Figure 1 (cartoon, one colour):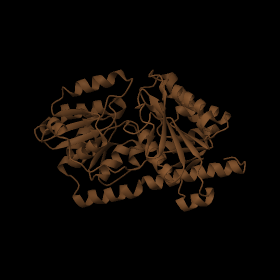
Figure 2 (cartoon, one colour):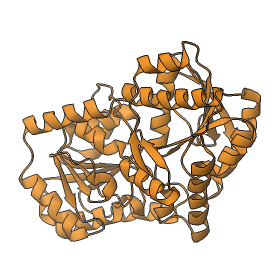
Figure 3 (cartoon, helix red, strand yellow):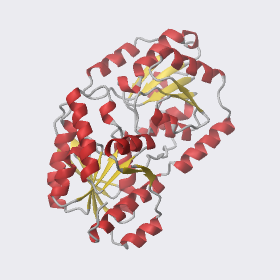
Figure 4 (cartoon, rainbow, N blue to C red):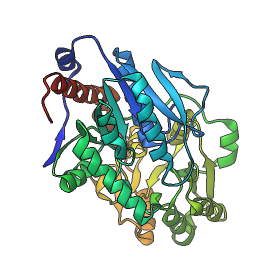
Amino acid sequence: MGTALATETPAENERLMGKDRPTILMIGIRGFPNIPGGAETHVQEISTRLAARGWKVIAFSRLPFADPAVRQFEGVEIRPIATTTRVGLEAFWHTLKAVLESRKVKPAIVHIHNIGPGLLTPLARLLGHRVVVTGHSLNYKHSKWSRFGKLALRLGEKLSAKYSDALIAVSPTVASEISHNQSIVVPVIPNGISQFPNCELDPAIQTLIGQKPYLVCVGRINRDKGIPELLEAWRDHLTDLHEQYQLIIVGAPADNEPDAEQIVADGQQTPAVTFTGPLPRNQVGALLKGATMFVHPSHFEGHPIAIIEAISQRLPCVVSDIPELRILDFPTMRYFAVRNVAALAQALRETLLDLPGPEALSRAADTALATYDWDDITSRTEAIYCEVLERASGNRTR
């Protein structure tokens, strides 16, 4: 029981597998490119690198969320499959259809992402596949799920642990929880930092946000991301800052969460707040480059790409003190008690009054870029594949 780090190098992977690379099938995401989400980014980054290393990689995307015209992306084959948009059934139905479709592909490994899709791990094994599952978040802690939905997600975690050939987590916190619940060792392979294209802010977006210095929050808009507390802190506790600063919130309301649209509507009535909606990645990078501070008041996380990317852009960060964020612990981060509006307002005010210097921000950025490197993350994932296939060839168990 416990967690472990996967650390094999590309050279060791070559030794384990030789130079011929089999097929990897990616299941459990909405797709890529240009689809927001931590799991989607993770799969895109490792899939394109695996393809460049000679693996054949096929990813199943979800209609209607993905572009049906996208069938290839940087060496990765993308196969769209239609699914329902009903809450609680979208991921399950798509994963079921993808696993059944996998019979035509005959992959060496089916890599399922997220514990909800992990419900189908036994079926994938029954069809003769080797299965790797990555837990990106403890989804059953999220408020949007009903009691039945949370039970189904916990069952997905249990079935993933029992029937997969390897179970990975993206953070020590997720790994520790799964290890405790399922009494297995879970290796940690985190998310990485993707470089932003170097470009200027689009004139239309610049017009939208104006010329005042700004704080920025990037992510899906819902209650679990702490957006209502952020708006309340800004509206009720920081009115004296509205002349000097504005708050920019980037992202779309979360799908199938009725109050997400209401959060945006309420926020649009708050002084010195601008919602940009979802933006292309190059524009997110341009916004970060010009920001004074990054804010992330989330209640739950897996391993937050948005924060480590903000740190890589030399931004001070104000974040909630949940375990998933505490483990980052960069000196340019300031924590506040999660869900505590007054504490959030105080953290924002104190950070603005005492911003870290450029040297401290540069050191944090360099550390983040070295620690969360997608090439290294791909090698560690590749090593898990090689170990699973090596065990399979020797008919050994985990």
